[in-house]
Length: 305
Length: 281
Image (cartoon, rainbow over the protein chains, first blue to last red):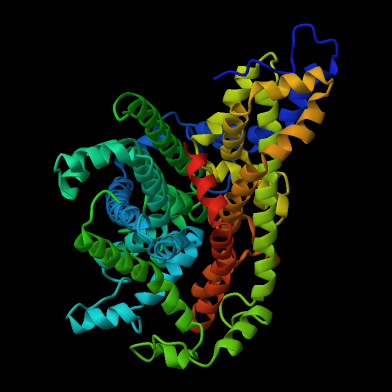
């Protein structure tokens, strides 16, 4: 889309107009240069350097930092943990919110006064900070006095997320999904409401059951929304869950909940490994860029209706 | 309503009610926890109904702070969070308005380049370039300052993108009419564009305020002095205590941390939903 009318006409007499757009853009360009391009370039540059422990000398080491990561079984392990964790967060989060959105879409049409209360309550977790979400779930799941471990104990499960990695993973997945449900729900609801009613009505006159209508019409029509949300949820699980892990498990027990971004933080700020963390930054950048490209390609070609 | 299926409607209501209860459960338990003494809480199982310590816990946390971990009063941390969130929201909106205005309403050399320089920032979140960005901020001497806490978060162009999309939908006739009347570009900006953007600005404000309020990793690195702790960092310090964590005070602080953004979302629900759904399309 292009604007036909602008303030820059070929016969504009005022020279002030030539500098105005740059003046307007200057603040954003300065901030972007300082805090985006320079750091991103630094990450690329530092990823091929090795620095000694005191920061006194640097040496060019080529791809050695990347090789070291490749040979480090704990890094590959954290790659695996990240994949597992984000699959769970995206899978569970999307399924639950789609279910809730379908139900909400069904009842919003009725004159029930509670319909808007559902929506208001379901979007509340969006406003809650990830670390607060983590603390709430930690409290609920506190190994010594929490409400849910008490119930689990009655069922014979000895809950302790500080020692049991399955329990730790369950806790962070729950907190992460809880927080993201609002976002997914709103987008699914908007998607459902944009499906033409006439389509659904035609199918139901033809005798298609609600179940069949959902799988043969609604679900395929929602594909662009679902795909968009899938990418957003993966990016969320990769990066925004840092606070949840930092507050609850610290990547433990052992390294069983150390996802890539937590490891990057740990190596960069706790272990002070400059080259190694820069190489991790570059790998993460490549992953995000790849995701974005896949998103644009795929959305344009396959899932449009 | 496509057809009458009372059973299916009932099922939908049931599922929604379970969903709402599960979503509300952690918040309810946290609220209950914030109204008891520590001794009452750590007796397993903890009480799930509110107790009588509401005023004691809230007034202690607000004015004095916790006894373990950090001792910063929560009222001050709320203030820091409020300043950070407002600076980020207002900063993003101002940058978005003027950059989008330049990109949409002017033709100039290297416009395409400026466009890409700004919008490529949408691709990479701050987390992936966290160490080098920290080095930049620290070498500028901005550690423990509001500038250091907010400026790097302004480097993403989400708001600019939304504003640009909106400006593209404004009819060209308005520009032509303004030009015909001899209005300067800035006059057009103030008298036509800004009034038209009011709803979008409100929507952006809600989204960006929450975004700023909930920032965690960045303040964790930049705020090393207690007077620059936003409330989310305060909570982290309270649960990182070596001794017995004072859960009743942690829960009180957590409630205080979630109330402002939750209120913003609920009271401005209409703008919030619109802003959120629009900004990603």
